[in-house]
Image (cartoon, rainbow, N blue to C red; front, side, top):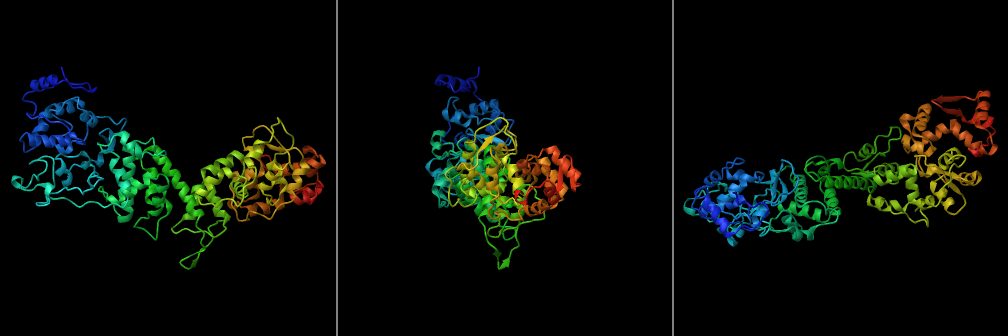
Length: 625
């Protein structure tokens, strides 16, 4: 019966030696045990010398391993039967706490990972070559497992550069031949003692960051001891995943500086990566925005900047990738929003606005702005600001929730009526409002009472009908509601946004506000999406799409083009709203217009009437439009 204790139960001395006796001839004569931070691979090397062997192959043969034939290939611990035989050969007690630490499972992992003292470390990070710290060997002569991690060129404890080749014969230190762990196996008669060749010590600028990196998967640092490094933003990320994040961050930092990739990472880049993670997310963003690839043009577009690629790196934790993508979006928005130069290298730059180009997705539009580095926009270019705002998730969400276009949200924000967006917008480089209103727009809306089926048009459609130039800012409307000049009722949800569910109780009071527009706060060159046009109209996207098609402005949907077409044409729903005072029925209105042969266009239920003729026939004053 096997005395192998997978559950960590105690094994008595009698049981241990009876087990050794039963395996006589199949185990090493001199038993051993694990040292702090030592892997089974290192124990095999040490046991070979203590048992008078000049080669580690006999130990591997005694264990009958199948997953590795040479000690240099021993990285995985998946085969428990194989590990049990190896532990028996070496004479390690099955209840050894250090053995249990070595064999600790890290939880779910892929074939690309190995267990490193309970941490999931990618297999590629385990070096097949032996490396040592002469100073550490001088303190205690055994092989530390952490020296096998490729990303480290130094010993985290002594901060000494690791030695991988004999300083005399210059042969690589290996795992097969051995003259004793502290000696070069290639030089005769133990003539080269590695302890006599101390290496250079690294001199970090940020010792705390380097200590953090060294502790990440250090077998001698317990989870309790490591908890001092945990941040709230990355508190649920495992130490193995944090190690991978540091390695990838440092690799990208090094590649940006040198122009090439290397599995060995210079300590200064590990130091930078450590600080980026310790100060997550601000320090990571600062590093990402600082790094510019060595190769390329005068600079790189944000899409090409090294660290932001990690948001799509499948080797990183999914939550970490999500956070990096969010940071990238914010950084990209801030980079555009905070640059306001009209000239670069003495050359004038054209405006980045494309008034006659159809809008694409918000991401594509922002990339158009960025283009080649350095990217700049003209001071006061509202078009650029709106394109940035369309890329901010919180702004998009509020736009859909309220049913207001992004540019109207920005006007409310600048007037101090949307403090809920201040943190997100200032983080993206937008200035704080010059003042804050006593009551926010959301608070105004929340205070409006509900009523089952209000009559008339919603406030968005009413504004569209009575404001031909779309020049009346929403801040005027919300201020009028707040001070009681306009009273509203909330109808049933329309699924077009909260504003579309608000109905004025009195037409005349709303008209008085809409008849007093300020100077146009939006330029004619501002491009709109069909969704934003629908919000402005207070109607569905399908109706907005038919309006665009009938007017032929699909390839240049700007505020100026909309204003021009509205001078020529008016929709039926606008005429119904303007006719409310005269109590003209909808059917009667259509009969009058058809009877007078007023020119019109129609498409799938939407009618556009010649504005001047229709207004004249219905005896609507120009001031009402």
